[in-house]
Amino acid sequence: QVQLVESGGGLVQAGDSLRLSCAASGRTFSNYAMGWFRQAPGKEREFVAGISWNGGRLQYAASVNGRFTISRDNAKNMVYLQMNSLEPEDMAVYSCAAYQGPRFTDQPSVWNYWGQGTQVTVSS
View (cartoon, rainbow, N blue to C red):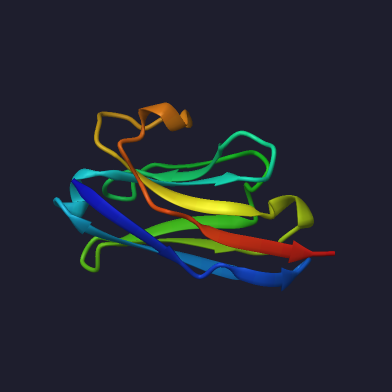
């Protein structure tokens, strides 16, 4: 079992930056790929970014590529999402997730553990 707790969400203006954090506890953190997903009202949950267990593989949704950066610190059991140049379209509940498998994908259904989420609100 892996427990995930997100923090860092809030209300910002378009063009601002935010850094989300996800603290993991439970089983060995470095065994898992980590990812960030988001869900806006009335929309399905969508993949934002993923990082392999050692940081060697990064993947981003096209909509955030170049603006968002995912990173992890295995010594601290933490994963981060740096979000720059935020847009109103980025407004959603952001959740981190953990995946134990050979290669993560952008499909929410394959990820094993989820946090509760943190709200990001972007005003125009």
